Each structure stands twice: as structure tokens, then as C-alpha cells.
Length: 348
Ligand code: DAH
Image (cartoon, rainbow, N blue to C red; front, side, top):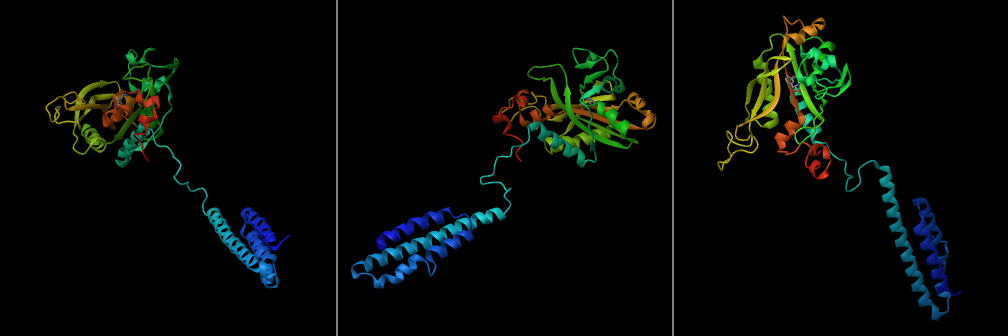
């Protein structure tokens, strides 16, 4: 084998070994093996002078070129391995680049949390209750007459005669009072169920209940609380309007409107009727009232003497709040799970 052939062979062999090296130590071994002072290639170069003069130039330049190429390859491989090593020492649980998509909150969750934040800021805490509820808590304890239409089999999902899928979050009022004497300031978010299914009703939806019981709580406290809520959720210029209504568990009862944030008194700038409030200037957002003494009477053994405590309560639909806030036209969008809809909200 000629010296030139041997150099070519050494280069092929060394290149394969360097490319296959998996750690810096192995690489250092290869450097010694192929380029170290006493290794074959440098020896060969040192012996060029004793070669036949016709071969000296060719062997000398080929040997030098190979040496340089192998040195460069080793440095490059070294850098590669060092990079990998740093990568392993760093936190490999860090997101890649670009970061993997992590998803985001559903609009209902986002809205629930926004509403919770308002009431947490006002000193309320969060209470929860079961979705499968006693008829007693869902209706009786809330002063609901035995003939009230909401008790009908067509209006409520019954599990058995004494058990329903709760039709509202109001039974959590009863549970919260049984669990804790006054003063009590709670909100209760959760799923509720009714046998309806059309553009404006789904069999399952979400509500947030509110209950405040203390000495000397008045309707003015209710109005002030709801005004603070309306301004944080719908904008700081909002007003609230209380209209007389009927609920079994409150007396007096009110329906609460928030001034429309889409128009001025029902009309848009161009003089047309506001499509959001339909020209009334007000948006109905929730039901509320002063807790009926009959509700306190049901839990009087737990510290709620109807003669001495007073309180207010309210209940709102989360879907409705989000629809008004974002101009969502159809309730079913919440549950279709079309990502083109969902991705517009809940960015985190
Ligand atoms: N539970 C009522 C409903 O589902 C909403 C409601 C109205 C809750 C008045 C209340 C209230 O606490 O005081 O329609």
C-alpha cells in the first residue's frame, strides 16, 4: 500500500470514528489515536523527508490536509457534544421552541372566574353543592309551594321522588347556612339542569348564586353589591335597575337589569334601534331579592332566627352573562366545541 493510500484509509477510518463518538472523552481518545504525537499520521508526515523525492510533495500535502480536516472535524464534533451536554444539564422539562400549545379556558370557565373574582373582592367566599340534589333543598327549603310549576316532571329531571338534578344553584344557599352560622357571604357557582332544548335553552347550563346574611342587611346593600358587579363585568359607566318580580325564596323579589353598554338609551349613533337591548336601554341579567323569612325558618336551628337576621340573595346564568358581554348569538355555540369559536376566548 502506498503512503497516499494509507493516508486516505486513515482519513476514512478516523472520520467514521469521530462522527460516531458520543462523549467528549471518547473524542479525546480519538484525537490521541489519530493525531497524537506518536500516532501514525504525524509519524508518516515526519518521515516525508526520507521518501523518494518524487513522492514527497504529494504525500506531504495530502497528509497535512488530512490532519487539518480531522482536527476541524474533532472540534466540530466536540462543540456538538458540548451543546448536547449543556442541554441535558438544563431543565429538559422547559417547553420546546416554539412552545407546545397548552390550550386555554372555555369561555364559560373564563366568565365564571371573572365573576368569582368580583365577589371574592367584595369579601364573599365560594361554596359548592352537589348537582344531584334533595328535592327538599332544591324546592321545600326554598319556600317553593307544592303546586309550583317548576316541580313538574316536565320541568325538572327527577332521579326519584326525593332526588333531582338541581334546577338552580339556590339549594347551595340552604347547604351553606346549615354549614355555617351568620355572618355569611357566599357565592355558589355550578351546573344546573332543566329539560329544555332549543336556541335559548340547553338541558345543562351554569349559574352563580349569591347569599349574604348579616345583621341589618338591606335591599340597598343588594343594589350596591350588584352595581359593583355590573360595573366590573360590563364597564364602569353601568347603572342597575331593580324591577319587582316573584321568586319563592325572596321577598321582595326583583329582576335586575344593567344599562346597555352597546348604545345610548336604546339607540345607536346612527339613530337605529340597538340590537343588543332591542331599544330598551337595559339588559336583564339576574334575579335577586331579600331572603324570605320562611327560608331562614327552615334553617333556624343553625343560627338563622328569622326574627333577627336579614339577608339578600341573587342568581345569574353564566351563559347569559357571557352572551351579553361578547355578543354571542346562540347558546349552542358553548357546547358545540367548534375550535373556531372556542379559540376566540379564554387566552391565557
Ligand atoms: N334560582 C333562580 C332561577 O334559577 C334565580 C334566583 C332568583 C336566585 C332570585 C336567587 C334569587 O338567589 O334571590 O331562576
